[in-house]
Length: 248
Image (cartoon, rainbow, N blue to C red; front, side, top):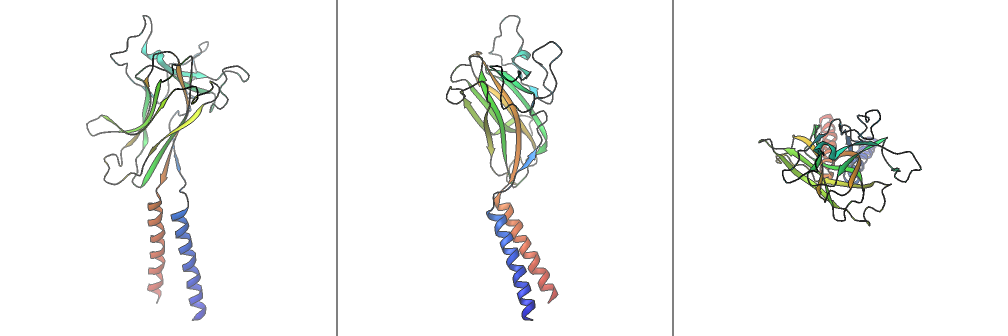
């Protein structure tokens, strides 16, 4: 009998410790695919330096207040470009893969897409990306990355955003992308966006048209909240206690 009590006590202590570790340990994130998040597709047509087509991403429409120079087209304000050879003055050292996206520093230049994944209850979300400003971009030019969902009326609703302002201090070189992120807190069952497709948007929010933003390595992670892990731990303990009571 004493030996049985020792065995039960030992197993119970293991479960309690395991449950506490679930609660106290940092939750590991689940990577969510962002199609063409590294802007590798397609390759520029032979003989051209850029591709105006960007697979998986949708180019936002031109705002009515933007007037382009004669002969210029809105489609030219964003696209893909390959990295230059190592050793060149404009080679991007930390580019993910062989290509990145460029976006003119004009208001309204945007790229967006809705993912197959949905916002899940009990999880928070972290959108990360690399970015730099070049081409004599104006100080104070604004860039915004955001997570959104489509309302029942078919309108995009921004849930979380990070607006960056260009400065020499914040973006000191044209050879190294700076990592930034957008964080969305835990999704609740009562939230209108629970179960809705995850939307990702990149937007040049303000600028004079001088210069550009280079963007690369867009990635998304879902992280279970500690409360969710705590419930799992308590559930594990209650199952074990129930199994023991049924045996006696």
